[in-house]
Length: 582
Image 1 (cartoon, rainbow, N blue to C red):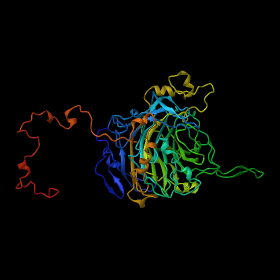
Image 2: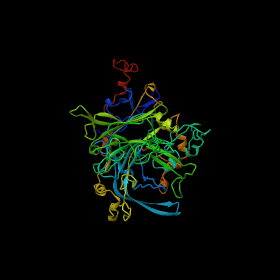
Image 3: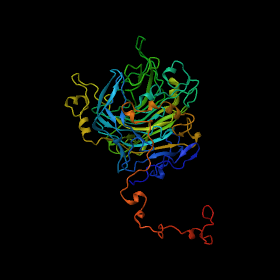
Image 4: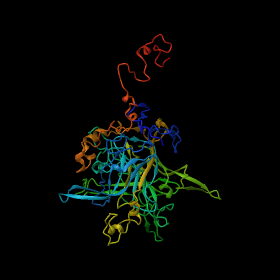
């Protein structure tokens, strides 16, 4: 792939129909791919952002890239209820390769730092044994509504669990892994005044006067849409229980995280929601219908996810990184499905697509590329993971009215940014039943820790070849608000209807790293570097070799015209032409 300017950024911006055009579009995106059709309503969408990652050796450390920021921090995913982040995010793990891929490596490498333990009230040392990467467009590129497509090769081996790669969107009011910024904002998508919920939602529609540039009486949140989360591993060739149709490991989670969640009579983990009341012969109820979201549809090798229905964010305990009182506790729901994956998803790029119509009357639709095969009886099968996928499969559909009817929540309407990352957590795709004698340590070079990992995980990590690879990311939006359901589409992190800039500026400390890393930061994001690149040959520095010429008073720049030629008004081809040389 050719290496050209990575993004046509910071150029003149033109607007049409309220959308910003060209400012975030990669010049390498082929013209035929600059429009697409909605797979739901057939209307035309136009490219508003793309990155083909064709320029090799790009770096994404804070301040290096106008669109992306790779993190250098611990993943603050810990609480009294458990949490098991085993990695340290290091920006050197994120780069682009000569074959045109964004790569996020995950490696065995220790990171040690000291921090203040709020419980012990002393400085303690902490070490992680894995390095990985997260890159995000927070407070740089955001969009509300449209279509996003990502071509991805998943990391590791399909039958070895332990990696947690994800492609997701988060509302700009929250910064991923910065828990102070998301506390009681994640994942609220609720714009009604309910006094019983007001304490749990930091920015509530009950607020008569919202400061920091926010709109009064408008409920806000850090909404989350998971385009893809990988659950790897080996289920022994057997389907997982309660999956309809049967799904085996590995699979992809496609999820809307939303609050407020359903508080009572929730589905039980490990079973599908009970939709009707069954009675015994004597008339007693043997099962009771459970409260969950109706009118969710799945297709192909996709099942509603029976293993994760959400998170209860309870009262925090002493020493946790954020504070939440008993009155601020709330239930968040995970409304989603699990999509069967195959070995080819770990070898060749496959496209995942989300169509997002925001707000009231909107919808969320996940699509994956599949390959249709017809047997001798004329039955059509959707074959996944063969590398030939050209036909889109409508994997999951969530309509707004399903959320409204259940809890009054809505399809997210927040300006949202894009996140790519690979986490390593003892709570995700790690062994569930660790023997009592196992010390539950997580160092691949310590023999006594091997019982805490899935078979083959440490050997896989020792190869140094584990990487999430993104071939391209493209975002499209409609220029015709009447052509789609939901609210208008916008580009920008601080739209008038859902502002974020002044709020973030007013609470900068929530979006900055914790000690000891925070001492290097003056603001959440550093200024973008311009210029300063190294030169290996004269042409790289713009001189083209002219700087080595001997210059005297008679020397002229090659290819330039003399003053007489420029001002020859009698010439037929000379200056008195119109603005277009006519």
